[in-house]
Length: 585
Image (cartoon, rainbow, N blue to C red; front, side):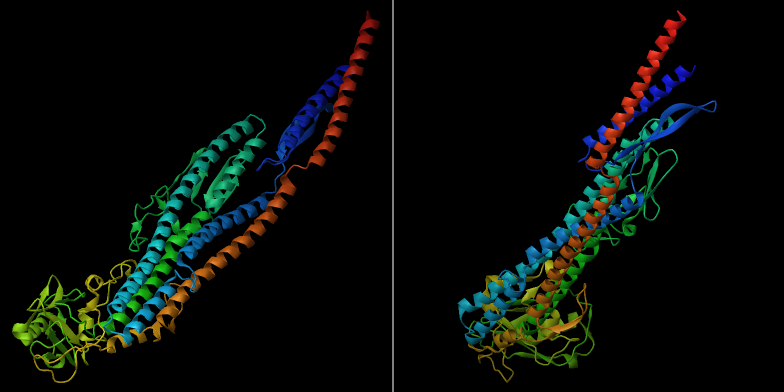
């Protein structure tokens, strides 16, 4: 009986050491495998009827520090967020350029201002008129391109959100499948360590995209939740995330305001609860950072449009346009109240008055309607011109197609604007605020095709009889005022992360570029810092959970000796049993 027990003990030792050798060899084979954790064989002394009966392998254990792993996943999520911010900011920085770059908006403003300065010196020069129009078109197209780039990046961010959701869903399914396999092995007392490694890889991939929390049940199954407690995986059941990307992006589309789909789990919107990971970076860029840029560009565009239009509406081209059509949407029944006097003249191709100019006293009109204003102009111009509300716009037209309409706003005021500026009768820039102005502001189309309509001078203020000069050739008064507009300080309110400031148009555009450059630099610095932390944590995790070849080789020697000793016990026990059999025979 004693020899049988000794033989059984030795065989159990062989079996245990065999398992340990298998685990050690697997450790060595996976020394460079990402996500692999070192495995240790757990053994227990086997006792039968109070007597030692060898050894048995109780479990194959992973060497994992869960706290370190949680910290690493948290920082990995931060890396995911910062990488997206860094990538998108870099694209914007490349597209916007720096203030000193020849292709930047500040350079385009400088060229526009210089074109007006040159025109002020030679107001009748056709080439210089064309130069003003061309540089104005270049400026608006640059602003349009910047606004378009912002929306393009919002669309990219929204599409990347869908891609991240797809990746997360794939890994959630994988976690659920592995949960099922692990629970099955645990129930059957089979090893599950390698399966847990695979599950950890899936969880780490998920943590790159979204912040999660988790715990493990005694069945070995992992329950995965969002930080706010929405269940993503429970046992073998995974709940998928859902997000539908937009087909086209525009400034009018917003999350929460309409047009942009949220990120949902089982019908519950979790968009605003996501606090880290790649998704957080994408959401912040799409819904905050990029809309802030749009707001900055719109503010700049509005000030540029209004500053130039306020002056251009006070002047006249030579020859003047046959008809001036307002850009403000109005109805004939709209209330109207103004003060001061505006002069409206019908002029021929040489700038001479056709009939005496109309001096319309807005104060005398009192509180009237827009239709009343149109009627007063129509009556005042007599046979030489007409005025009417057409398709929601005030239109003033010279009766003879060879003549034009020229306006001097005088001291007229409708609110804070002159009469012509209020109705937008002679705007240089067109574009309204109902949508993003930066995305659709342009030079007025008929100015582009007829640069001679560009205002350089204005209708005289003195008494002008029919046939006398109303708009003088060589008058550069408006051109000078337009050139000076770029040196004037403008008050900008706080918007989109830019504080309130008083600066020039060029200065404000430079602030937009500088803020974007600062954000780009900050994103790169934060990414670099976070990568350093992740590298350090990864090293600590590796030192704790990774395979050390020297340790494994040392274990091999121990296992080899233990295996040899057990084999020797079997040999000796077998010889003794044979000897006893011979004696008994």
